[in-house]
Amino acid sequence: MPLDDLLTQIRACTVCAAHLPHGVRPVVQASKEARILIAGQAPGRRVHNSGIPFDDPSGDRLRQWLGVDRQTFYDPRQFAIVPMGFCFPGTGKSGDLPPRAECAPLWQEKLHAAMPNIRLRLAIGQYAQNWHLGNRRAHTLTDTVKNWRAFWPDILPMPHPSPRNQMWLRKNAWFETDVIPVLQTRLRQLLQDPS
Image (cartoon, rainbow, N blue to C red; front, side):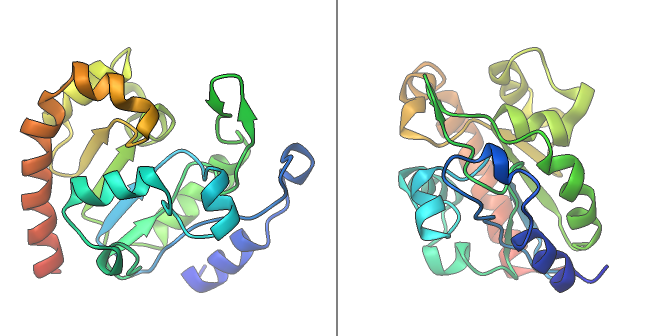
């Protein structure tokens, strides 16, 4: 199926409508030319309101990690932004609820098949790592991220850039000092040379 048709179907999807307290608003960015895929969890409240992926403090930190400006980040020919759940699932006791389980099996494989030029997948958080790494992931997110070289240069497991992850980032300062420079070098190569 052509990507444009698939995106139209995703944006019109109402499969989870009965379970979404804030309503249906799928948020996705994709192009068949994209070389970098950002796989996150699901939109938060702010992204749900704006309809723009990573249009929040998490996105600010993510763009800082990537070393790119907003214009580059929001160019679908460069970055596909494909969360595991396309709609805001609502809020629970300790933050946003997990992505709806119906979403990934319904859309992920179709979307990936329609984007043949992806060269690097950034698997942000446990839900994206579960999908993109399967049984190759470690028992914990921290161990999976520590083992990032096992998946490089095709996939990079990453922690979520949320401000709520400050403690994790303090305890695991190696991520920003050791991994981020390698990631930025790879991204510069991919953004300058589409082959």
